[in-house]
Image (tube, rainbow, N blue to C red; front, side):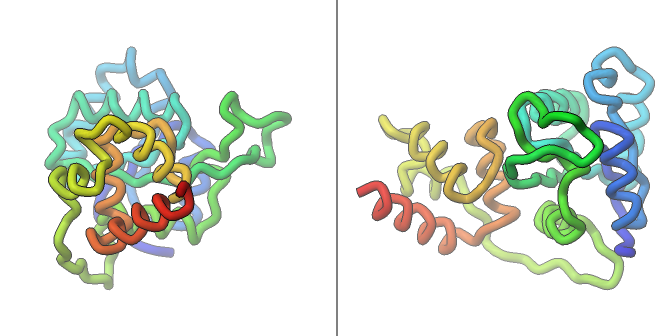
Length: 199
């Protein structure tokens, strides 16, 4: 069991059950879109974020990004960390059919994927020390053609697919997620490989 300092917010109880078997942390639920009407729950998330830090860990589908963005708009970003799961097709065992987008949610991820996502988000894990590296910047995005160019949007989408990252990410969310996963040099190599693959 890995002990994490920050609180983690997930969409629902099945996500919470999955995480609680892997990490020792405070895990809070949004109850899906219920958070949009529940001012008290949002106030609680804000207080917890300010006191301990908050890791947003929603599904990689459109609904997960709507919930993530709602929390981002309500809580100062300096208190938030973002954990992203990869786009993996499938359905959870308890469901008769896959979700609308046919992707596994947080509850369908393996413990290894969940722990890796939390580490990449910068979770403060007891017994592990953080390393400092140069971040990927918006200037790097421009230099690599991922923003500011005529084909930037298509290149970003192709790169998201190549890297198995959620396709609904905005350029800013993608930048943030890439910083959790890659160094600037690794990103440059991925973009170069993508350009070779696409001729």
